[in-house]
Image 1 (cartoon, rainbow, N blue to C red):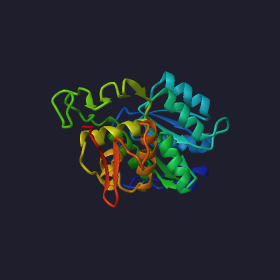
Image 2: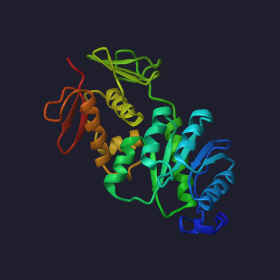
Image 3: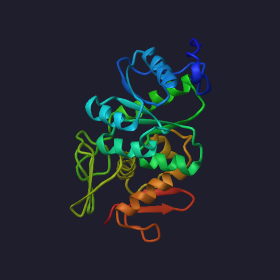
Image 4: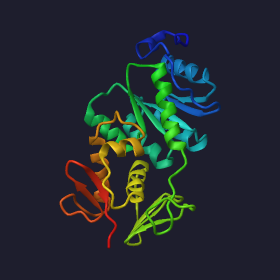
Length: 262
């Protein structure tokens, strides 16, 4: 067991650190937290695991740090004095694809799904342990820095080169992380892009929601409704409806598949 964290008010939020995976040394993390005692304890925890840490007590300061410092990850509290944390998250996503771990006291399913859909990579509900924070941060960094899946040009199987994948009028470029439909670029969130890319890689195969959670989210404890929300957003951006699909077809009770137009 690691020694206990400093007390202060942080004892109500983060408890004794337990065994956990460690984050790679020299990882840079931005801590966004308005409570000075909690912020100091988080900094001490992360710096004690050989991470380079900066902090901000408010949302606008966080945006400046993300733009100028470009950290490897952000730990974002939602209760900020100048911006609602959800709004800060959206603004961060407008600047960067940096992994964001949200720390929130809000445990409502609808609110959590909203945060994930807005671009959060994972979340922690207060109170949480230091070990849990480190483990979640490690998992987020591992998912977001793992080698991207590659596509062979015009094909649906992994190839030697990361060329674009073309399915009818749908063109997915894994290097540029862009999607075009009939020549028009479609703006997708990082998660939406990863989801669409994985389905395209497995075109015409039915993929279960649990498999999507394991392969795209790299976790299985997230509710399957999260997949439904992202699929709904993808359908809307692709200009189709579940009742009249063109690309994304639901196989009731089994999963979903991306159909390659013939």
